[in-house]
Length: 236
Image (cartoon, rainbow, N blue to C red):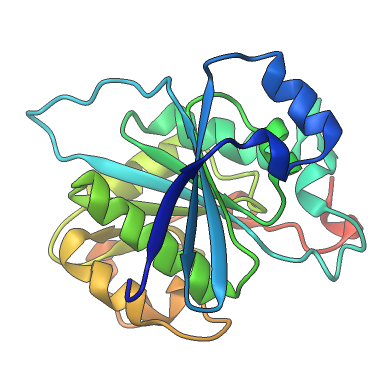
């Protein structure tokens, strides 16, 4: 990232009193870095409970994208109740169950991180979709990952087995889920494709890179597994 500036800071003074109280109640769990590049500003919150990764298998970094504005929902859709938890909580649990490497959640507000289970680093982004993807690709490259699994926080019905199936197709080309007509997340990109993710601009997601994948790189999934939450009517 050109002109990137990274500096360590204490996290507490940047957040609401409620969030500061939460951090004080969890000493040693969090460390913070402020990360700025171009028009998008981000913050990185490290959770120090990553699982060890076997050196005999490819390292898969996983990112949960949840920095949208929830404009059509009216309130924060990621905090909406679902199955005894929340939309983002369910999405995160599925992703965590399917992965053992480094995990990142890209969020819009720091309070949203309270809805996540342990095992995620947190990046804050107020930019567009391409900014979130650029941050994720840069982060994955720094981890030395062989591939980056991309999941959406507003797709809470994706099961762990679908994540695993997509990961299993890691190759020279990306792989993704498909509803039979459209290539969709979750999707995995090999490290050689990270520059293409960084090159995306505007409010464009990774789907722009998935349209021409061969059938061998698309995992058929049931439509109900690929449902996303855009409005309150989308909740069961």
